[in-house]
Length: 473
Image (cartoon, rainbow, N blue to C red; front, side, top):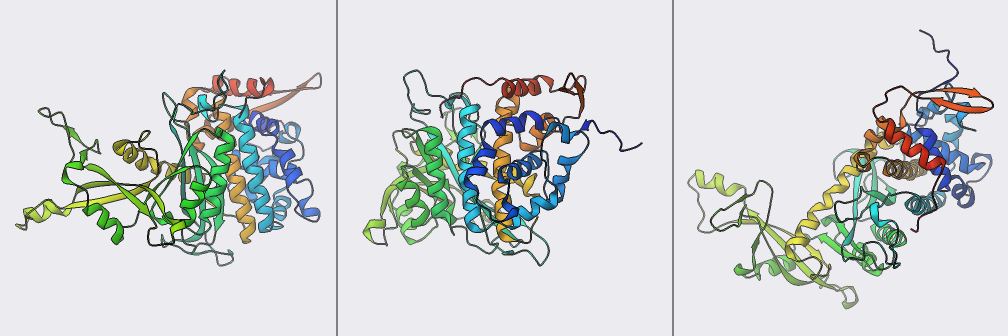
């Protein structure tokens, strides 16, 4: 055994994926918008492309960027920078440069949506010029944060947050577009790294505003957008930012006195049984026997604040039996009446589009963002590799760019990969071993015979090698 073959490439799938990034203008956007000073910021476009390419191939630290410089990679890709150079580039970032990178990520995502089926069948406009989603459905914009665990005492901003884990806090916004037959896979439209001890709503107002604007640019001004958030974001800043952008909100509320008073005012006849986990149908009545019920009541959020902050809407309440009721009954401590646990959320969604039951089901789908958190932590965000906070903030944005790029590449292949996880996309499309050969000054990649996903890989390669006209985004 010897590591002596100069013609082998371990990630042949990077060829079409990097070509797609080039076609969407990643390098040009970075050259235009990034102003990192001194020689550390020279050739910003190539350095950003190198970092994103390494992340797509599975790099989760700066040292891992060395995977771009093995075997025949130098013949396939030009100017793959050394890990030390890329590390110096990231450490030269300030917060302003991170915001420049945010703008690049937003523009790049819009370009990807125009070149691919990233947003499913809703990406192009129809023959009449109608915006996607104009059939009345909501595009779903989810906002949530997650703690990225870090180790070592040199990490700037690291601290113990609400989870009790020492780390840094990443705030993300994802977009999902429901279609006629399914929903698209989530894409990330906004991101922000914060100190580990930061509260969930810190900076949420600006991030929600950025996310709604990007969603509007992706989907058109007439598309309905619903921002879903949990109770940590139930505050004037995030809610008003969503409403100012023309979006509706669906946000879990805290059980304060105003909410409890509104729930107590709901008439017993207003409760509607719903399909719920492990529910069964009563054959006699044809109704669901899950004892989960929903009702709604008009509600004004932030009524205790000044009048300009008041937000009229609906309080949708779901009630389920208290889990301790059966235990108490078995112990001879039965209650005189049913005891319920209440879960309430506030929404400004149009009741003609989302009635009480539909609004409840839609709000519960907010948990889809946890899959995005897991996908990021299973790839580029397995570590935040630098001791410098702004370098890690830039790393988060680059990880988001890589996530969306991999998702866009998968959308050009077969249907089974459109909603696949990042790890699955990497295994089937990216980490394909190849041998580089040259004949008549033409480079040929020899890929494994009988590769199970040959059809999908070929579809991606053909698409970026001979692209059709750019779709309207």
